[in-house]
Length: 263
Image 1 (cartoon, rainbow, N blue to C red):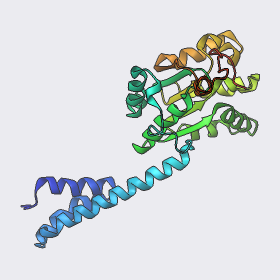
Image 2 (cartoon, helix red, strand yellow):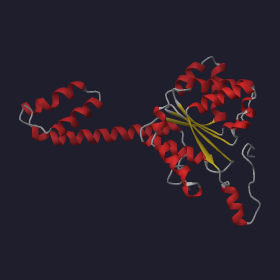
Image 3 (cartoon, rainbow, N blue to C red):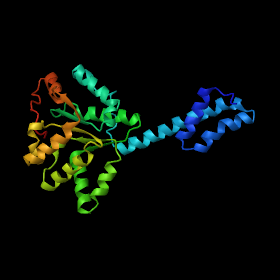
Image 4 (cartoon, rainbow, N blue to C red):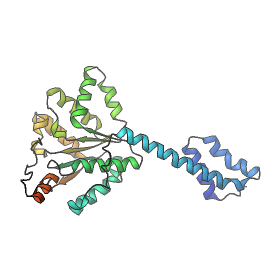
């Protein structure tokens, strides 16, 4: 009979199973006990925990490189005091990643320069720290990559690659060039991820102006319907950083309305 504490035995077994070593998980503790070396098992458990920490660190570093998140745009550098407490609470809840399990989307609206991209990046960094796969990309750039894949007859392969990411962050969707081909690949991406994988989209354009992106009213309605069905809406209803700086300096500010494009 094992003389090892159940908690210690569980730590060793769970660690080895996590490392995909089922035979070791089943045999290591009994063999050490039979050999009269149960006293070594606490040290074994400690080394296994160190290995687990190191593996997790390496995985997070790989995920961070693949995510292409803007460096430094984290919650530590995000000026949360500029925003209503309710928005800050929404951001912190999203950073926990529960919405990924529901394949829910996040839609962030606001004027240019209010911090939408920084907030999206901060959420992305927090999710990577938790072990989730994320990709941050300007929308126009991803659309061009998908167009190239379509022309090379490898669009399905490109979509499968994107499907490996738990969260796809599309920054500035309003800046897509809006040709018919671009609209088609963007809509295809949204349809492919619908109810399967999450997207976080930032936009200077409110929904009522999205026909500027998709041109066709039916396509616009279909895109919005897929995105909103399972979604969290973030409203950045504050002045832009430039506007606030201009007021402090006594110069004209940025008084653009949502839906206008930043020059």
